[in-house]
Length: 400
Image 1 (cartoon, rainbow, N blue to C red):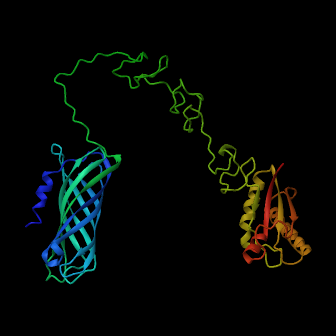
Image 2: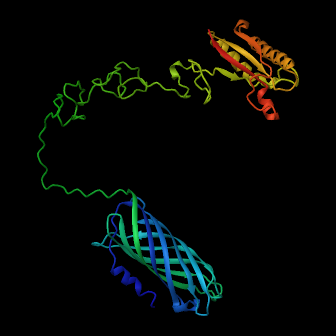
Image 3: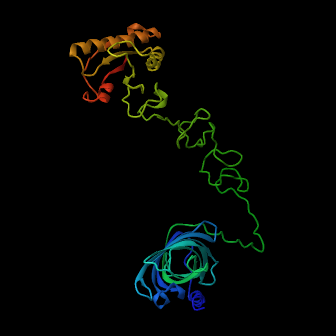
């Protein structure tokens, strides 16, 4: 068949692409030879394509995605069609033969036809192809290939429709180089005699020295490696903190690394509150200066709702544990009601929280209630959500 005669011609004129790159992109142009029953004028049409290939490490198989497009292919009966094919293939690349790098491929795809007729319909196809590459530079190669496609067609008595694409273009290779096979070592006919010595002059012969480049005048162990008395991984001769406790994380100078896990600017070793939420303003002990205790009250009342006690209890535990702190408990309201009423209500609510803290064991002299009423809103009082945010109890830590 005339469709198959182009394959050996393509293989005969192809060379190999340079090895080593992860990715290949190949823009192509060519000609599609169609089976006569498809009704294409001259049994064929020009075609353009793009192929993308990923080269796997240590494998001759590579996955490939491809697309091919023809604009306005003519029918013998008049009219024309736009034809788009997309396919996924597995590509097997053979070992280089002299300067040749041949390959074969197979896979499946789908053909979309805009302007289809009775014989030429959309459909899935199986494909198989062969070709080769010849490098022009380390990253560019000439690519020649032929691909045969068998497409299912319900209008063709169950027989497959055949197309043969012949393509030529350039392959552009890029990306990190894939590992290359290690060269095979050739054993010497006669091994040279070993002459022992002590190249680094540390008193340990080369044949047993596990650290053969020890600096001059460095105290070493029986293996010729620098001593590390505190076992921190930093040799004595460069260790600026030679008595670091065992297991402590150290820097390249052998000194303890100080961390700040909550990124509040206070090192863990000095941080009384090591899990401060991100963005909180903290004091020198790493604790949030002003905390919203999220206390809820009964409507128009200063009675604390039971489910609000968790924050109060946690704050009480902190004040009892850290006796050098006292706290201002400040109440706020929204802007509804009069200013005088709101100030009184906010003070009563702050006093209720102080009473709850004292009930949990906090020294009454360490907490003070303040009522600010509707002052210092943090949200818009025109909305219910904003008013809910403005009705709050803030606790400010005061260090003695």
